[in-house]
Amino acid sequence: MSFAKWIGASLGWSFGGPIGAILGLALGSLIDKSSVKTKTYSRPNMRTQSGDFEVSLLILASLVIKADGKQDQRELDFVRRQFVQMYGKDRANHAFRLFKAINKQSNISLRQVCLQIQQMMDHASRLQLLHFLFGIAQSDGDVASSEVIIIERIANYLRISHRDFESIKAMFYSSKTNAYKILELDKDASPKDIKSAYRRMVKKFHPDKVQHLGKEHQKGAEEKFRKVQEAYEQLQKDLKF
Image 1 (cartoon, rainbow, N blue to C red):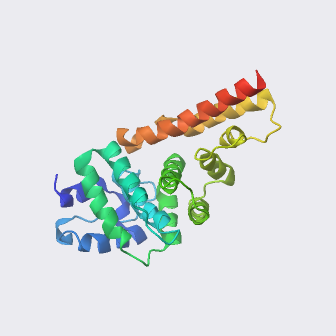
Image 2 (cartoon, helix red, strand yellow):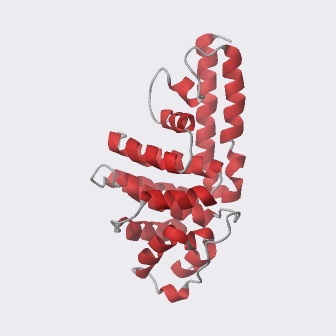
């Protein structure tokens, strides 16, 4: 599939609003924009397509990578590897070309981009975006405080609760309290509280929640789901219930 056909076929609401403007600039350096059929941004109930998620991911990833004032090759390699795993080599090559074009832009409004995503994307997909961003931040071996700050800003703009933010964040750190944080619990939680929290988190992070994004995004969702299961099993073992 050509680059123009890939863009034209896979995007829905991303062709409008501030994300559409960013895409326009990026595409201007890659292809003849007249070969892409644009769409309007006027249907708040339009279902998020795989391409919408993909473009949102690319823009937010670019902002996170630049948050610490430098671009580490390991972070860029992580983005490329993840896209190869999710989309296959050909589609990943298209995505990474677009990512590099987006990455050159210096005047992207984080708030405007996030508000468009928040309005158009369901909660489970927004949680999946956050998980991927932490993965990028950690890919160079350390999650810098500047990266945590911008990811938390993104979470706030996306209307992701502080507990959900801390839950996903805890999946990328090693700490004795991680299991409690992942399950959104206080350290004095009872076995009954833990069981209840586990059932709640299973529903929230179940891979089927992002099924509409396509099977390419199931792996990341399954990773979150596995972390919830591991946290529950760890508390079962520690508290012997």
